[in-house]
Image (tube, rainbow, N blue to C red; front, side, top):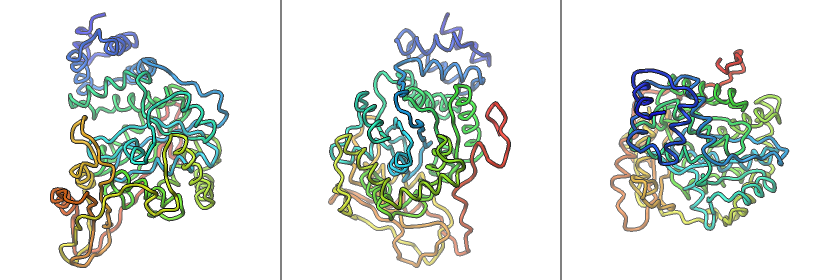
Length: 446
C-alpha cells in the first residue's frame, strides 16, 4: 500500500477498506508514516468525512493499536460514562461513588482539561497524594475492591488515539464527528467497559453548540457501540451557564464532596442522578431510568456513595478530610467580585468566557506544557432567569494573593447578557438516545 495514494483517494471523496485504514493507523503509530502525511489524511477526512464502514475500521484499528484490558473476572456490569466537555462539569467525581454504591463496576479512563473545559484528572490531582497514573494491578484491584476507578491513559492503551489526537489538536481537525467517535470509544472499549452512557453537552460552554450537531455525534456513537457489541446510550444536556457554582479544580472537588455529603447545588445533583440512572439501566441493574433514579437518590441519602468515593481516593493514595468544609484542600481566597451592573435579569450566559476566565487564572492550559494551579477558580453565583440588584455579586474570582485578576473578572462580566424582561429558563435535559418514546432500529438510530 502507498500512503500518498490513500490520501489522494480520500481527498477526492473515495472510501478506504479496513486493511487500508489499518495500514495508515499502524504505520503512523510505528513511525513508518510521517506526521505530514497523516495530517494530510486527517484534513481530507475533515472535508470528506468517513463512511460507516470506514469509521468502524478506524475504531477497530485504534483499539487494536495497544493493550486491550479484559475485566471478565469482575461479575458486576462494567459501565462507564463520558462527557463531551463542559464548564464546571465535575460530574464524574460524585457519579462514580453513586454508581459503585449501586453495584456497578466503573472503569473510567479520563483526560485533562481541553481549551475552556476542565479535565477530571486535573481535578483529582488537586487532592494531595492522588496518583492518576495507570497501573494495571492497582486498576484491577480498585475495581474489584471499590467498584470504581478514575485514572489516565497509559502509554500502551490505545497509543493510536494519543498520537492522532495530538496531531489533530495542532492541525485544526479536532471537530470531525467520525474522528471524535473513534477517539472516545477506542479508549472506552480498550479499558474493559461493556457499555457507556454519553453526556453530550450542547451550548455556548460546550464543543457542540447546537442540538443538530450533538445529535449527529450521539447517533454515530450509539451505532458504533452496537457494531462492536457494546451498549451505548446518550443524554443531551444544556451547557451554557456553568454546572453548579464551582469552576476550577480543588474548588470543584469540594463541591463534589458537598453533594456526596448531602448538600451541593441542585443542577449538579439532578445531572448526577440522571446519569447514574442511565448507567444502571444500561447495566441491567434498573428496569427503567426512573427506577435507576430512585436507587441513585437512596445511596446519596445513605452516605454509601460518599463512602465509595473516599475509598477510591484512598486506593489511589489521595487524602481527603470529609469533616472539614474545604476537605483539607488548598483553595485560593476570594480576590475579586463581579457585580451586577444594574437592576436586571440574567438573560443568557456565555459558558466559553467563564471557562476561559479560569484559564486566565492558570486554572487551565493555554499551551500543552503549561502547569495548572489547582487552587484557583471561580464561584459562579448568577443564574439565568434570576433578577439581581445593582451591585449584587454574580461571580467571585478565587486567586492567590498578589496575582492579577483583571482579565478573569472582565471575561466573567462580559459573559452575562442582561435584560429587563422576564426570561424563560431553558430545559436542562434535551432528550436522549435511545429515546424510550420511540422505536430504535437494529442499526441504533431512532
